[in-house]
Each structure stands twice: as C-alpha cells, then as structure tokens.
Picture 1 (tube, rainbow, N blue to C red):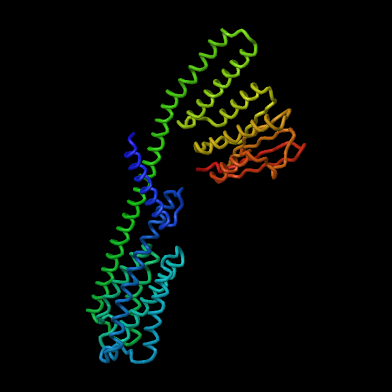
Picture 2: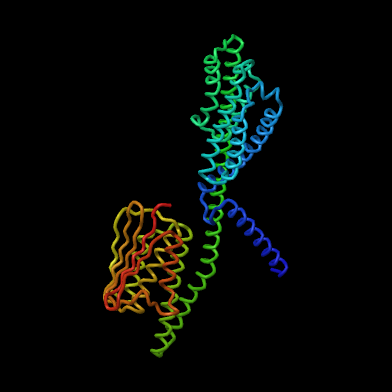
Length: 426
C-alpha cells in the first residue's frame, strides 16, 4: 500500500476515534458501554433537552407574570396587589433558576423538575380560581391547563406522574363551589370538553413516546447485533487465514523435521531435531486451540482437561484435574483468560517451583467460575517478584479486564496456590 494511502487511513482512524471519544465523554460513558447504558444515556439526554425547553417556557410565563403585576388593571383583576404577590413571583423565579442548575443530574434533575412543575401547576390553579368575576371554569387562563398536561406527559410519560394536571380541572370546579359560584350548563360542557382534550393529549403523547423509545431500543440492539456479527465475521476470516497460512507452515515444518530426523545419525543432532519437532507440534496444537476459541466452538472444560493431560505427559509431572458444578457457557474472552492463566501457572510451576504434584480444579456456581491451581513446590514471596518476570502481572491484568479476582497465596517452602474467579454471567 502506498504511504499516502496509509497516511490517509491513519488520519481517518484518528478522526473516528476522536469523534467516538468525544461522544462517550459527553454522555459520560465508558468504552465498554452496553446497550442498556446507551439507552439510558439517550433517555437522559432526551429528558434534559425537554427540561431545558420547560425552563424557557417558564421564562415566558415569568415575563407575562411581570406584565400582570406591572399593569394595575390586570393585577386588580387577579387580586395580585399585595406584597405577597411579589414574594410569590420572585420565589417562582428562584426555583426556576435552581431547577435549571440541576437539570443535568441523573436523579436530582428529574425530581426537582417534577416538584417545580407541580408548583407551577398550583400557581396556575390559584390564578384561574382567584378572580371573583370570570374566574374558575370561566377564566381565560383555563386553557393553560392543557399546556401543563402536555408538559407532564412529555417529561414524565407515566400514568401516576401525569395525575396532577388531570386533577387540576376537578380541583378548579371544587373551588368554584367553595367560593359560592354557580356552575352553569355551559361550564359543565367546558369541564367535559377540557377533560376530553386532556385524555387525547395524554394518549397521543404517551403513545408517541413509547413508540419512540421502542424504536430507539430496537436500533441500539440492532447496532449491537451488527457489531457482534462484524466481529464474528472478522474473527472467522482471521481464523481461516491463520489456518491456511501459519497452520500449513507448521505442518510443513513437522514433516521436514521427521524427514531430517530419519537422515540424522548423531545422537546430539537427533535430540535437537526431536526438540524442534516437539516445539512445532506444541505450536500447532496451540494454534488449533486458538482457532477453536476464535470460532466459538471451544469447549472450555474439555480443553483444560486435555491440556493438563498433554502437559503432564510432556513434563512427567503428576497433575490432577477436577471439575465441579454445572458447566456454563462463557464468553470467548473469559475462556481465553482461564486457559492462559492455567498455562501460566503450570509453566511457572515447572520452571520455578519443582513440585511433585499439581492440583487443578475448575468449579462452576450460579454466579462465578473458579479456577484453582495448587502445587507443593518451593513457593515464593508474592510481594518480591523478580524484575523481568511479568507472568503474575499479566494474570492480574486479565482478571481486572474481565472484572474477575486473582489471589496468589504462596510462601517460601509452602508451595503456591493461584485462585482465579470471574463472573459466569454475560
């Protein structure tokens, strides 16, 4: 590939990574975000956008309220000529600003917005019922109740959450009766008309909200499925390439070493060739296991038991394998981590511990899978790992990446036990 094309591809990848990173940081998500977390982030962003729209609507209401207080005829009509009216106005202004400041908080933003919206509704009911003439069901502000129903349905599309604005109409009617106002037939019709409009608004908005949320969840799940399919397809492609390329080369090497081994006469040379052949056979066996893992048809328990048996035959070490619990399907990453940790433990035992026996136990329970490797060798101090030895560090990093737990229990002369546990659920 030409250098210019490589440079362009690198720039495109860098730009894509930067864009993904910016979106994740803005939504406060990690690289390993799940579909549920993505859906929750989308719902939070949607709520914040709607709550901000509510704040700007409040600013309009506050502007109209200031005009009512400033015009004597209007303030007289609503009975807002006392100091208490100004105190109420500035209280509404303060809690509106406070609500705006906490909108982004996942929990406090929702609760504060709901409480302040209920306070707005109470103020609206007071303004509707307060005028002695033309108040209650005759008030020109009664249509505002429909707006509150729409706001509650948009922000909190749940039946109980929408209850306050639905109660505003019967409360207004009750206040009319308490203030000794006669409820005429026209006002009863007005009550029924507004009640019908409320139910229509609630039904339409809740229905549209559920359809929107369901469509978004479907898209998120589809994106996750497409991502998984792309990963599986790429993994299978790599498995084919490795099998046809590296596998064929290792098989050819084994055949050639067998041919050379038949021609060699010196014992030292035959020993070297035999060691080379053994290494090639081990490599092709390791390659076969890796290809099985990549194609997700690798049976972990049987694979570990077969490896323990092969390793014991090759090293002449007494290794005993035990398994317990109901076998559960694990992700390819989890299977690979368990297999690599077993490899590292057995390799370390042979290289450093000089044990007479090693016990390997794989145990499944409802929530976790446990791997335990214990030897009766020389042991060591886990806090004083020699420089240049990264086996324990690699094992801990594997455990941390999968949310597992690795415990190394050893002391000089007391053998070593490595316990590895990780969640068995997806």
